[in-house]
Image (cartoon, rainbow, N blue to C red):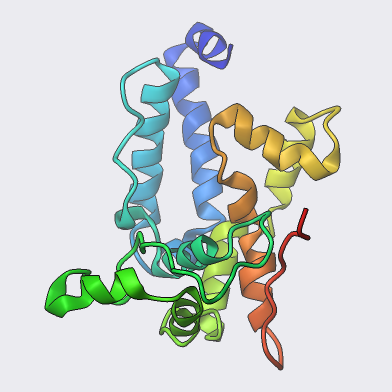
Length: 214
């Protein structure tokens, strides 16, 4: 439906709409993004990918990878893999999943692949906590918080959610939108500031929130 309506718009209007929407979203996160790449380049690449998707073209852009993910978000991603959103607390003596970002170097060098396969989840969690990208570092918390929520603390996004999710219960809106967009990760990622950033912003041992066992 969106692609059909999009095709009915004049080309110049489509271009302006996309440029405005993407530029606003990137601008709210520019301070964090600039620590790793040029926000203007992201705006350009995102507009190209969105144009192809809305035009029914094959492929939406580059394959997922580290190039567009700031290091602090890579750290959060690896913590999420240990402590998945919506799941009960895991067994810390269980085996840690393979890492998708090589935060501790490249697996396979100097016998490291064998160590990764045998690593316990609790050991991985401890190593991540003491990693240079850990949310224990104030600067890392600031970068992660603002790149996910933006300078407006997600205010504009929440307005959009209310607009497009009319009639959907508040507790399930993000899940609903994620399913509509084919972005099942949306709800989990937007929970990272609350689950993995805030717990480190204070005294004492950080505590991660988990779902109650069913």
